[in-house]
Amino acid sequence: MLGIKKSDLRENEPIKASVAGRDFVLVLHNGRVNALDGLCTHEQGPLFEGSVDGDGLVCPWHSGVFDIETGKANENTPWVTDTAHYDVGEDQSGELFIEL
Ligand code: FES
Image 1 (cartoon, rainbow, N blue to C red):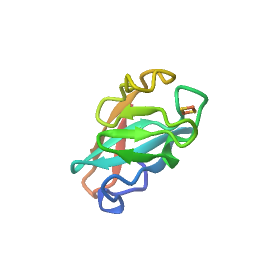
Image 2 (cartoon, helix red, strand yellow):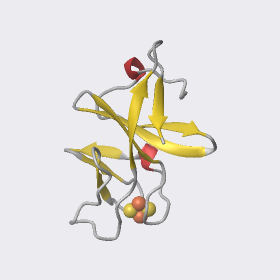
Image 3 (spheres, helix red, strand yellow):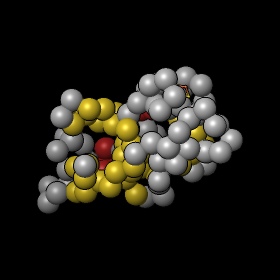
Image 4 (spheres, rainbow, N blue to C red):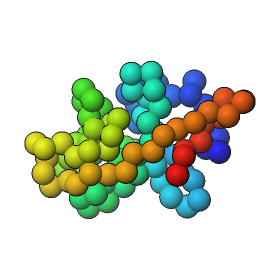
């Protein structure tokens, strides 16, 4: 459990979530909660401090872009490679969990 509810999230405002010593970024996008690895595939920039541009999550360090809904690296920022995308579930109390 993440200790976070969907209602804690704001559309297109990434936040950090930690599970089992790993950091993830959660992004509510088009009404759906997405989870991606928290550290960028380039030089481990903190994606949970990134921003959203269209359907992309932008790394705060060197502006690498990842598709929020798939984790795919944007072809216009070839210095980043694809990252993992995870489905996010909700338990009966509304708390979110990442399906690892
Ligand atoms: S660390 Fe993310 S683009 Fe460089």
